[in-house]
Length: 80
Image (cartoon, rainbow, N blue to C red; front, side, top):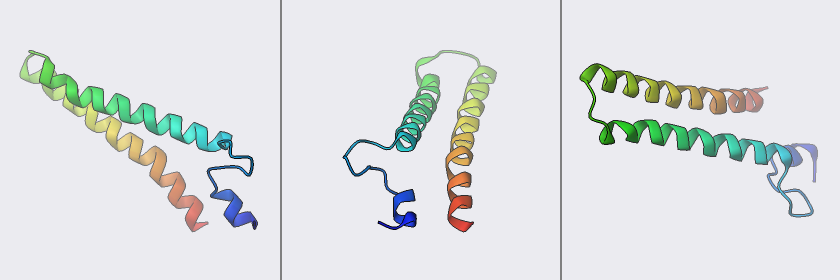
């Protein structure tokens, strides 16, 4: 295996997950769970319109933040 193939391999040669891949999977799973819960929360709450707007705004911010945390560094590593 050359070095560029090793950098993108999620599974090491002994079939255990790479520690970096485990961290990425944990971050992606936790960001999905929090974003889903915040997006689902307004359907179960009976609150004022202002509170609903704040919850929706927070959920949208989490979604954009998750995209920036994952996509921008990955794109930079591909470009450079």
